[in-house]
Length: 144
Image 1 (cartoon, rainbow, N blue to C red):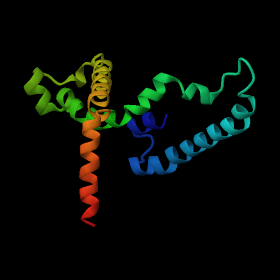
Image 2: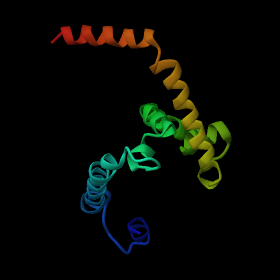
Image 3: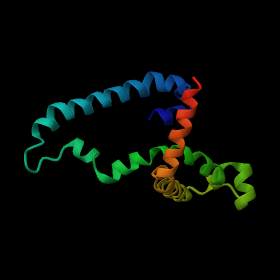
């Protein structure tokens, strides 16, 4: 509702005020309710057969994997988005900008997810890469 009201000019709040006055309090209330649900409902009932808890739902394999690839998603979504949505780049590569094609957004999301999974599996889980970064981190730490 707030986004629509801001879009139509009915509510004149900039992003910082919207975040500070609306999003942060609402998100804090949500997190507190999730905590209460976990501590007072899920934990005492976890041993009961057939009890489906919120914690169990959040621990689903696909959500856990999505959390594991969240950093590659964060890093890759911008550059990949520029390929399809940045006017200068997209015009040169594709001859058009994909903002005019709403059907393409799920394709873009799929490309980002697939790219993040590949980077996670082939780069972030690679022991040689991890060892190199650890060695460079120790070298950098030794300078201080």
